[in-house]
Image 1 (spheres, rainbow over the protein chains, first blue to last red):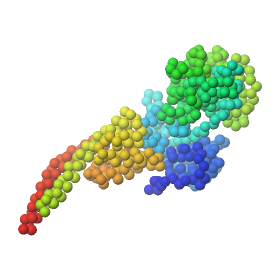
Image 2: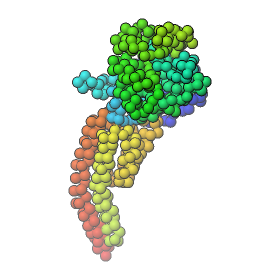
Image 3: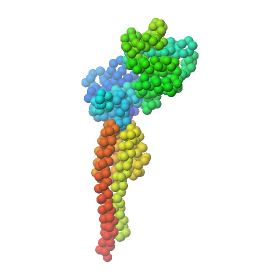
Image 4: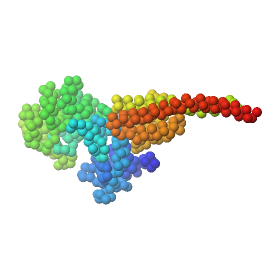
Length: 337
Length: 163
């Protein structure tokens, strides 16, 4: 049984975030990925495992194939082709041989792992009266490796705290994959810890983490550093979660990811009325684009949001393109930092 | 002479009477596992460890070994772990090949489907084991007596022949 051979230690023994997800993979894939050059192992963002198709890595710029010997390749013919057995094993390892315990997660299409890494899952979806019930015949995975990026909030924080040391209602606006959630997480951490240099004492922060992306909870326990005064409602619908936090946890700031639906905005308004500060994100490339969306239009009209932080990737992931004052709708003169 | 033959007879007889008891313990253990899976949705490694702690020590090995193998995360599937544990447990048990086949079959479906399906497979295995248990009990009633007498009488016969 070659499968049971213990994993050989890689030549270069420097721990990378990739190592944390390796034990989810069958031994043959572990071996391949641990043979990858160190630079690649340190920067890889995703491992794409699709049955009957080449094994691929998602990188900051583009992607690459992986050969059977664990070398990166650009030619598809060199790539290792993922077998049905591989997929079966990944399924078992990711689910800890307990698919039945993950029905809720399968309905959402992903599983959060210790360390905050996430595995997206595809296959045949079973529905019950139009509602997703489960995924059967699992055939594809996207292992997304998470990296804690601390300090990204530092350069925007001075613009988000008022001179008398209060946090402004803030919305982060960004297209997908521009570091929106990363910035949100770091802001939550700093607000929770307190920012002495800006005269801001740490406050209770409530996080409604509908997609388990902010805190990366594993069994309800945050796997990311989100600060000492942060309470997380994991996998909770945003609107309901905001109300729950408001009622019971006494937050000074409520943070959520990706406001978009009408009920989210309605809940947000409740939060604003309760005198609690709001920190949230919105998908979009510009403020003009947001103003066209019915649900968000209202938010603009009541002029409740005090700061809009626009993100992009003109100078790499997480570039702060601009910060705009929500009252005057003028730029605060921050350009591309 | 008579005594030693009687003892041999009794040993053989006891192996027949052990089996129904062990199957009964297995049934109880599988029932516990079913409850953990269906109501608790406990992940398999923990569910197995839980069962191993609470079930009859004679069958605990099967569950504790599987749990151990799975907890190492070294890349084996639940089926493989179950099979390895079964291979270790079976020779020490009083089970027959049929019982072993039923358990192996159960291993094929362990942990790979939703709750409903898991329960179905566990119930199926239990039903099959119950049938085996009935047969085992019948065999045990018959054979225990037979081997007890056979041992004693065999001893007696040998003694008589020798005299």
